[in-house]
Image (spheres, one colour):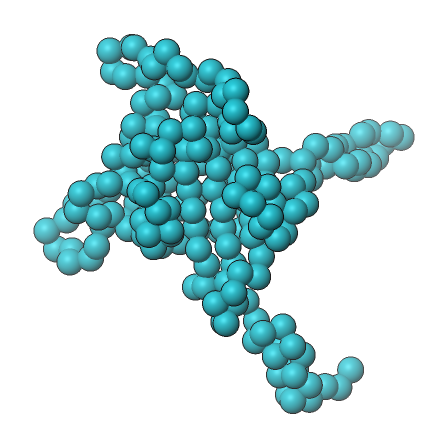
Length: 199
């Protein structure tokens, strides 16, 4: 099948020139306690210091059924992989400190004590339990407009990676945070709680 470069460029231009990986905004928060959110304005701290994130994959686990010497695959459950972000470390360790506080609420302190509100239901609205939060990844267009939104529901930190120190390095420190979550939705952002097609 023959095609021309002008046709290719025309089709790509129709979609805004193609989605750019560097044009995104990330917001992560514990929706129960504002002290555990990334600052007063999430976009000013988590949105700017999250160096890298990802749009989540969509997975359906295959379910193998053996019959007459052959394995046939049927559709199984939806599965949701852990989500990882890379964060630039500020000198105050603000984000890392908030993540450590969030993890202490989940697992308890070193002396074995736990917060008495751990896992308690919230009576107002649809806010998750004490230890759970939400996150959004907004894909931006070259015009600065939000083109697609992915929202992670009932999210909590499961892994806070190490930070390397090295006399021979002059780079800004960075580290990763791994999050577990129940499911994600995508589409147009209708509110800070709901995203169209939460599936």
